[in-house]
Amino acid sequence: MMSALQLRAAARRVRAGGLIAYPTEAVYGLGCDPRNARAVRRLLALKRRSPRKGLILIAADFAQLTPYLQPLTPADRTRLDATWPGPYTWLIPARPDVPRWLRGQYETLAVRVTAHPLAAALCRACGHPLVSTSANFSGRPPARTALAVRRQLGERIDALLAGPTGGAAQPTEIRDLRTGRRVRGG
Picture 1 (spheres, helix red, strand yellow):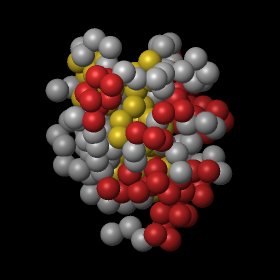
Picture 2 (cartoon, rainbow, N blue to C red):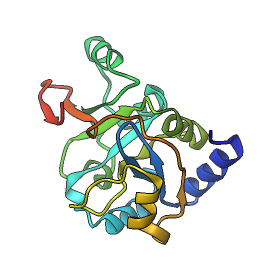
Picture 3 (cartoon, rainbow, N blue to C red):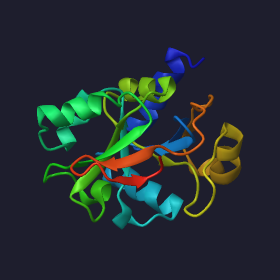
């Protein structure tokens, strides 16, 4: 079990612009402070990921995501509440001031209220959501263990929170909130 001291130290690393790997529902995530452009650019360069693709934000609760999203209808909230916390990522219209380094080429932002206890605890310790992309180089299989993260990313990351993933066989399903269309997984 992760100690409160370890979580606080990891949160300090994130707030200082660091990159951190941590377990999620299916794979290890690689994250940083979504408000820190330099950290996000570093993450994208490390992964060799195009900034046009956009990124996922994970949060401990919906309140952490509201500064990034357009207001939702009650029906939309009901739909989200039925899947969260859980392994469901939704594409939701982003506020106009959400940076392109998060949205990529889209007007939506991919967000999830995570059900993974360690990932949620890290978001709570940081006091904000985290960028969450798979902890691997683009085109390579995602890391499912702390050892796999170390082997692939090694010293290129600033911290690694070791722990079991949530056991899901595939990365989270992604759906468009406006249309209900499945974009990935499921």
